[in-house]
Amino acid sequence: MLLELEGVDAFYGDFQALFDVSVSVGEGETVAIIGANGAGKSTLLATGAGLLQPRSGEVRFDGEPLRRIAAHRRVRLGISLVPEGRRIFPSLTVEENLRVGGRVRRAGPWTLSRVYELFPLLEPLAGRWGGALSGGEQQALAIGRALMSNPRLVLLDELSLGLAPVVIDALYEVIGEIAAEGTTVVLVEQDTSRALAVADRAYCLLEGRVSLHGSTSELTRERIVEAYFGGTGKRRT
Amino acid sequence: MNWVNAIVQGVLVGGLYALFAAGLSLVFGVMRLVNLAHGDFAILAAYLAVLLADHGGLSPWLSILLVVPTMALVGFVLQVLVLNYTLDSALAPLLATFGLAIIIQNALLESFSANLQGLDAGSIETESIQVTTDVAVGWFPLLTLIAAVGVLAVLQLVISRTALGRALRATSDDGRAAQLVGIDNRRLYGIAMAISLATAAIAGIFLGIRTTFDPSAGPVRLIFAFEAVIIGGLGSLWGTLVGGIVLGVAQAIGAEINPGWGILAGHLVFLAVLIVRPTGLLGKTAPA
Image 1 (cartoon, chains in turn blue, yellow):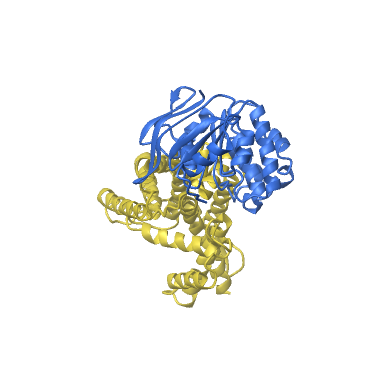
Image 2: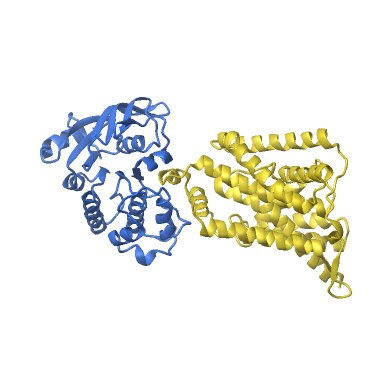
């Protein structure tokens, strides 16, 4: 297993966001994490990227425990998070954003020119300030920036949030290409159908707990709806 | 024609103000830390040069080669061991650096007494070029301005062109996102403070050659540096140079009107800029 979370409890102050969460992701897999707003999806990614330390439980990368390894050192190990809201550096140009992403010189297929090949829209914008991009351009740049470190594991948080459907289609195509390079992808999404279409397996979170997991071909719509909203039948948005 | 001379002298002293301000501005930009001990570190550097002159017979120019790296190391260690732990709150860095300022002033007072000190750079201190009958440009003030422009140019180049500069700007934009591309913020803050105190050391030694100083000379340098940064606009190094020069010229013109009004005139121009253009003369119009 490339990434394993085992019995993870995570807190923001006194608020517990994850309860005994166990997730495992194999090398080369694409795994979707779905669930409603506030179910703990982003927290799960933050725990993997090292932005949040679990209070109990174990996080392992390629079999090695990640406990006490800071976020910036995890990038060197090959974990790269594309954060919610893109978090592009506004006072760096597009190309500088990519170069700063590549400052961790890991070996691998991704270079500046390969990223421009993957996102042809970025190349003509190379000299533009990061703060002057549209949402879709920013999301492309954020993915490109993450790839520049040649990660073994890419964590994508809320890829489609606030973007036009046509832009989302293009981004999901790219995820397929990234996975085809052998990179492991963990995808957090509220747009369940898109995430399930691209993923090999999926975990559904409900109020900080894993409510369902399995390969996407086995998960029926009924089971997902139940796991997504909870078994009581109450609907939440 | 004395006015022309006042303006020329003001421009020249503005370079020194910019030299003090550059490091203050850098550290604020990268980690939102206001170093209240910045002026005192500059004075500490000047005292180190005094020590090297008294015991090693080193000229101030040679002592720069030793004092600047020493102060850079002090900055790095201070940041990594102390100041990094204060950055989570807004008040803690102010209290910590205010405390440091008091510690430095009192340590200097204990070690060197309150007597005025100076650095002797030889005849260059008094030589000047007579431009017209009324206007003379001192070699040393001119050299100070050139040094300031040089230091700012190097800093600008590092920040805009190098990998270190990219990392500094990225961290300044979004420290959390910077961690996600593998930047060790705490180490980077150490490097920023090292650069800051290195420039403060250069400023302190130039000040020590230009004028006499005592252990309590730091805070007023800090105020002038603040004013230069604010007048020029936060986040702009060339703005800092402009701010220093505007402050220097304002002080010179004020002193020309009445010898007691120099510093007051500087403060008034500072306040006027704050009212009319709070982002500074070259600052971004909207806070980033």
